Image (cartoon, rainbow, N blue to C red; front, side, top):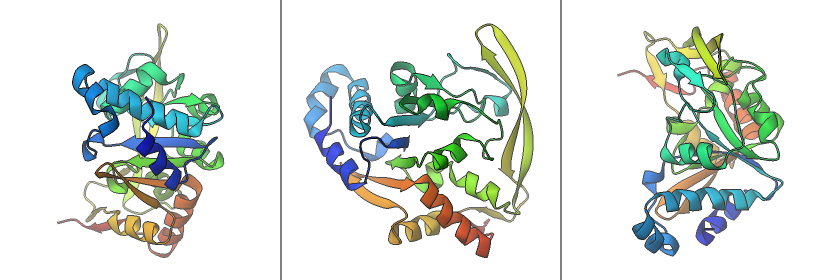
Amino acid sequence: MILKELISSLDRLNVRTGDTICVFSDLTQFGVPKEIKLEVQRYGVEVLLEAYIETLISQVGPTGTVIMPAFTYSACEGEIFDLKESKSTVGALTELFRKKYATHRSQHPIFSFSGLGSKAADLMEVRTLDCFGSDSFFDHMIRHRGKYVLFGTTLINSGTFVYFSMQKMQVPYRYFKEFTGRIKLADQITEVKVPYYVRHLDSDVIDHWDVAEDEAIQKNFIIKEFYNGGRILSMEGLQIDYFLTEHLSRDEYFLTKRAA
């Protein structure tokens, strides 16, 4: 089912036919749309999840691409990342999309993504296991002029792509930590090394992106729209990276606050 009010919101967020969108979500921020409430009561919440996904797919059309995170953090937890079986740990919407709609999934044992559409195969191809480096998924989202959609969530809660800008600018409160991962493809398990740009645990600062989000909205690097009691943010990967790196070049602590 296509949600007409959501289509109108996506129009105002400049999500267009042919776009590549990567959707991060927190559905607890939205009420159940009136147009589908009866079906959800009769058949359960999966009907609502399907409606969200199908509306997003409809909005970008057959030439567009929809991507969602399918993060497992397997390498961090000492677990095997099974490309077909490892579940997304970042919400029911992302797991349903992975299982029922996506045609491709990236072979990354921490930050895996799944995708459907014209650019899914290219964007799901893992060219480096460096989580946020050159040739990572986040780098290729910029090259493909992809857009990030924060569906009911915020930059600090879901803006994983911000770490790409932070790593590029080599902020002093983070460092590279190498994790050993195991990836299962068919019946073969391969051991890999995964560089992950993590925060110094003894640092006197913590991530704080509210100021950045507010300024980016004010300056139109981020578009804000309200839908069914919640908020949706849309931004081009290239533009938000430019905004963040410009600030970090002047103040390397722009995305932090003092730890309590």
